[in-house]
Image: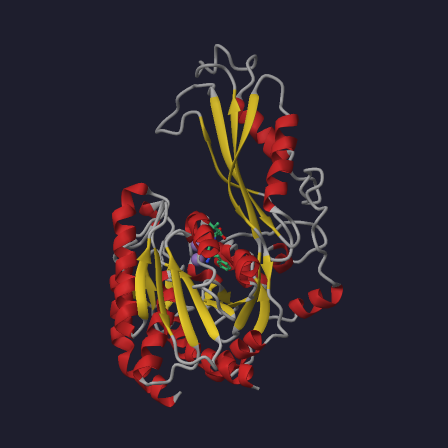
Length: 463
Ligand code: BES
Ligand code: MN
Ligand code: MN
């Protein structure tokens, strides 16, 4: 891989400039006002994939945003790796909390990123991490060191649930056939503590609508007598967890796989400083499900969180009003073997059956996704581990993450293959938050590591 690595070190500046260009296109998949920009981003990715040497590069249309596909065949004797990533990003809101405009990338040094980090929406999730794969491929191709057959599938709807990608995979299972899926859309523990993600949580996302009086009322004239939908909503929400931090929806835990004490002990060995964690977030305490550590609560245990809540008057000054309606958006992160559709039904039935007097409650389901775990006793895990060990000089730690990538479970169902989640970002990179960033160290380290994965994977498959 010497030629590939030389190529990478000579091209670092170019690789960075191209990523900046990619980050300037606001590919916000959730907002239809940006659909032209989303398409522009897909075209940018397709062009770069083509220029890097991929064949059959094309955009596949869907009911939503297009999917970028490309392939590179080397030999029937080699395994085929499907590289997955997403070019869409989360909305940048609240924009006023950014120190620089979200789609005008800038490079700044931070304590954690002394070599500099690139600040922009999508820098880490997932444009920066996805683009590493295209640049790694460019380097391997230019050096004649492509060690596996490759297929690229880069979607534009990950941040809105990947529904159309699911359909696309089912309809094109033959074209997409592969031995393993490789993606970089997760994190490592720290720049000097490499890790490989071996678990994702599932997701059930719902919206609660509370209807009170048929119009907004004067909170003096009617307050105290008419049930206030916001007050009722807070009652509903506070009733969803008990004093032990457990979710009180009947049946919620029935399918939860308890992780063995042995596995929990191994997990606890990974370095983690709780006071640094709190300091980084500006909180003076932590709380969650009794009997589990902070990291366990954020990875191997299910959750229920309000993601947004609104109703009544939220403008400047004080307006005395008893609102007619109140709303909340709630996410439940799920673990094996919870089923998102089943959990959504349990939530809906429970909330709609326990309505405070004087209001009506409706639960609207949004998208969901299944959890996924990946084993460590496979060729693909060993290849990823060895690749990271080569470039970091340290064996990576297997770690279960708290986020969700619903399509990973579907890959397993439809293609019958596991995924390797070899991400390079940090949890502190503020993905989905204002001032999202991605370390230059991480970007380059990713590009350098990926070619080794293909080499070691092909070697392992041979033997
Ligand atoms: N890349 C993230 C998921 C992630 C982040 C996994 C960090 C592990 C570590 C992905 O883009 C994401 O944000 N997924 C959404 C789910 C989707 C259905 C909107 C999530 O987890 O909220
Ligand atoms: Mn992502
Ligand atoms: Mn995301």
